[in-house]
Length: 230
Ligand SMILES: Nc1ncnc2c1ncn2[C@@H]1O[C@H](COP(=O)(O)OP(=O)(O)OP(=O)(O)O)[C@@H](O)[C@H]1O
Ligand SMILES: [Mg+2]
Image 1: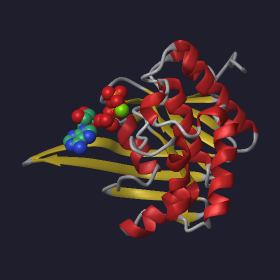
Image 2 (image 1 turned 90 degrees about the vertical axis):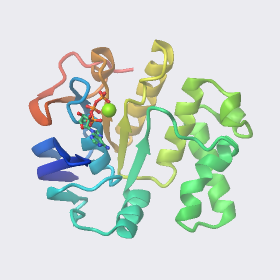
Image 3 (image 1 turned 135 degrees about the vertical axis):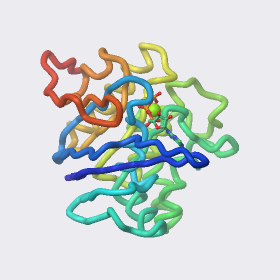
Image 4 (image 1 turned 45 degrees about the horizontal axis):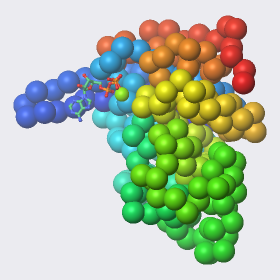
C-alpha cells in the first residue's frame, strides 16, 4: 500500500537547521489500521504531513499505491492527495461559511464530478457518519464530535484508499472520541487503510498496530494485543 524509505525532513528557521525526521523507514499494507504515537515534538505530524502529500521530504523515497511520489511537483501531489488520500485534522478544518453538505462536496468539485453525483455522494457520506439530519447546518451550529464526523465524511467522499488523521480525537471528549474510533473501525472493516496519530493509549488500543516515534526516529513497531473492537 505505502512504503517510505530513509525519509529525512529538515526544517530551516533563519540559519538554524533542525532535523525532524532522521532516515525513517516504514511499510504499511492494505487494510492495516495503524496508530502513530510518541512524545510532543517527536516528528509525528511532520511524518503524517509527508505521508499525506501535504509536505515534501528532503531525502528519501515514498511509494504510494505502487507510484513513486517522492519527487512529484506540487500540482501532481495535489492530484494524488485528492484521489488517494482522505486527510482528517485535529482542528476539523471545515469551511465556516459552507454547510456540511457543501463542505463534503468540495473534494468532488476539485475532482470535477457533476453536481447531481456530488450531492448524492456527499449525502451518502454524511449518512454514513450519522449526520443525515444535519446536512444543512453550518460548522458552528454543531458539536465538536459532529464537526469531526463531517470532516471524516469529507475525507471519505472520493473513496480514498488511505485515510490519514492527525490527532482526530485531540479536541474531543471521551464519548465523541469513541464514536470517531467506531467510524474508523467500520471504514477499516470495509477495506480502507487507516493511519492516525494519537497520544492517548486507550485510543491507540482501537487500532491494530502501534508505531512509536522518539526524536525523529521510529523506536518501536508492535501489534496491538487485546484490541478494543466496537
Ligand atoms: N514548520 C516548522 N519549522 C521549524 N520547525 C518545525 C516546524 N514544524 C515542526 N517543527 C519542529 O519539528 C519537530 C517535530 O514537530 P512535529 O510537529 O512533527 O511533532 P509532533 O510529534 O507532531 O508533536 P505534537 O505531539 O506536539 O503534535 C519539533 O521539534 C518542531 O518544533
Ligand atoms: Mg503533532
